[in-house]
Image 1 (cartoon, one colour):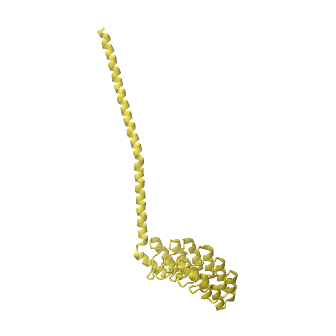
Image 2 (tube, rainbow, N blue to C red):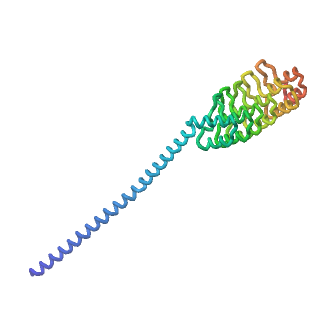
Image 3 (cartoon, rainbow, N blue to C red):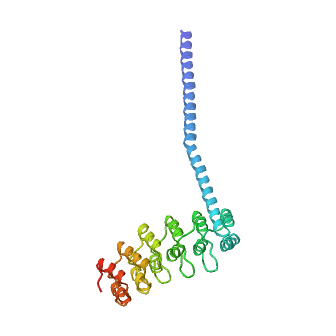
Length: 272
């Protein structure tokens, strides 16, 4: 009988020991899985941090490059000199190594404005392709776009239209590019501005003139001016918009003896 008790309790002990070992094993497996899951969850955070560091490094490098391209007085002066000499190969080199494409000379003229003054189409194109500002005004409020329009630089003006010209920008007389173009007889420029931009055909400058008025009053009324008047009228020029003294275009045309222009104005509904 005693032997049976001993055997019974021995079996119970073996069962308890087995249960204990199994429990310990389960706890270890659970702990390992928990650690693996924690490591797995933390991994993306590390990758995100690395990604942010890379982005920050790229932004810093971009800013450093930007400074290099705008704050190098020696390179900028060399570019100004090369521009004055129309040295195209040197201009290209200097822009490549970091000269400011909008560096200004003592008259606050950029390279693009100088190129426009000289009607150097190839030089103007180099500056445009490198991001030159077509709206940058100089000491007397000329910009490349304004000057190209006013002075008949038609090929350069055409190129500039792809580079966001500000058609509301005005010169020192308060005029847009259209007004001096009309007054100086640049028919191609007048057409280009009216057909390919949103320029205001009825803008009034500081003396009180529109493009239509200047095309009559400040010209000799020749065939070119007659064509310009007709183009202006076709694009919405007001034939009855008077000048600062209250005189309308038709009266000016009659007083100056411009019969053909007067006829064009009457056909457009003008009256004195």
